[in-house]
Length: 370
View 1: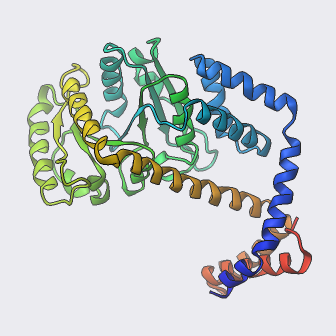
View 2 (view 1 turned 180 degrees about the horizontal axis):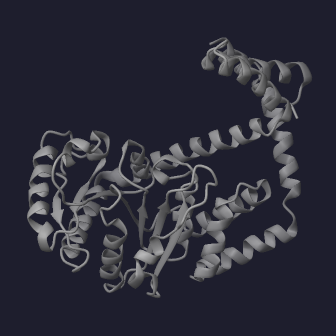
View 3 (view 1 turned 120 degrees about the vertical axis):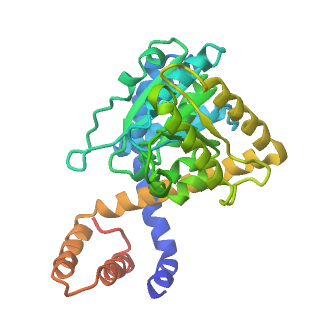
């Protein structure tokens, strides 16, 4: 509590420091930067996939100058959309081997054949050492990747649990501005961390493979409760009996879980992505759910809450990057780390001491530590 009070007491000081930094960055946004943003803006609203890819690369960058360009681009695009969200956003998750990419390929082809423009934001797991990723999802969507009305953007998770990052929502905005009316967001696998996908999508689809044993027990309750639709994939050939059994088990499990909406009972559906069977039924249930949440301003309220949560996520990220860029603060952190690693100081106490040092430095020097 002492540290919190100190933070409020030094609030005006912090505002002055951050305002000075903001002004510095504003001055750094050159005319060439603005020209590049305007070029990207024209290309994106002109439905040019090359400019859309460049725009998403820009918003994923951690360079301060490129972040400013990205924020300007997002502001222009948001004004172009008249602060309206035009696309249907669908999150998909499931354990490895569930056939999520193959299912998306089948569902996407069904949608483009109906006249929709489909964007797929697929997150691949990153290496913890290099933060690189294989980005192989596009190769598993062979048909959809070749269609002119489809856009597939693989992105590394960069160590983010569940694969959903603060820039994922911004990527959705770019896709909407480029005219894609259905956006599919695939995450790296089932688990409680994947609940984050519900913070940027309207409908959450859980894709599961058939199998025996402890399938139900192995699935996290949190992700079950977040699911609006359950798809039992690979329901063909010798796996069909197991798929039917699993479908029944999940239907029974869903009856004892509290639904997100009292007026919606999540269905459990059989699909064979390999044979393109059952995909039309899934889409039909998605449309039913979409029509339901469009009533009584529920969707508008949910998206408003999502935007506020994302603002807080970006704020935490910016503050963290600003603070950790200080060499003096890093030196102080290294000193505390030595005590923490040898058990001379609890981690929580060390973090508290670092914050106290940070606030005292600002109060004494009237500036942020460099």
